[in-house]
Image 1 (cartoon, rainbow, N blue to C red):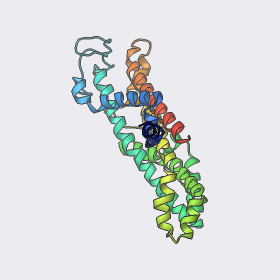
Image 2: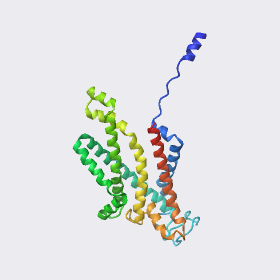
Image 3: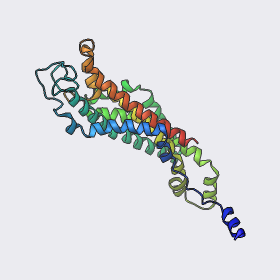
Image 4: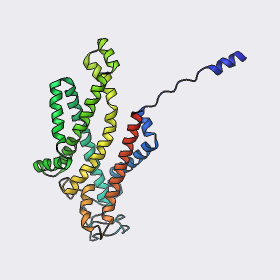
Length: 288
């Protein structure tokens, strides 16, 4: 009995399955806080028709009414439109734009990076394309696109997507170059594995982690860029609300009705803070 007890005590505990880095990152305090803030804003946008109580373009005789006005919890704007309705539908519009623009920019950038990895001449051409896009600051690019296409939802999506192409393309290209020099890739080549299989089964999965962090960063940039375009009047056409458009309309009334600008400012701050915390949590965990 004593020997059996000793053997049982000496038996090693079963090894724990390592946690996935993304799940581990989102389980940290930063990750949970970031997800909670982003989820709160996204939920508000998704439930806009249920929570608003008014249409975003419905007008009333109560112009610049303060918060707490019956039927208008956040007050009204200069045309008597309900600020809560315009804020919620503005969140919905912004989320719809960035949910299309950022994946589109990521897809184009990654495809160009794969093309660059295929041949040295293609690499040179792709790098010059990235340099050309980066030569235009975001707002200059926005003005150039809207000068050709006019203001609207599609030009905003195209501007954000174009602005994000070099970030994703250069990040994936660098990851491919780094992973291509690793020993496991050399071993796979010696073993007779085809180049396409090495790329899809070995290199890309190991080069993809930084792209996940970049998505969170790019969403933050997209929020600012869309807001800036709407603020300057080259974004989504009025009367459709966006956070930047509501903020722009509030500027002449800051002293008279500061509540007018409070909603979009708090919302943008919450969304950007949540995305930044999520990106930081992912980056810290991936770099371990």
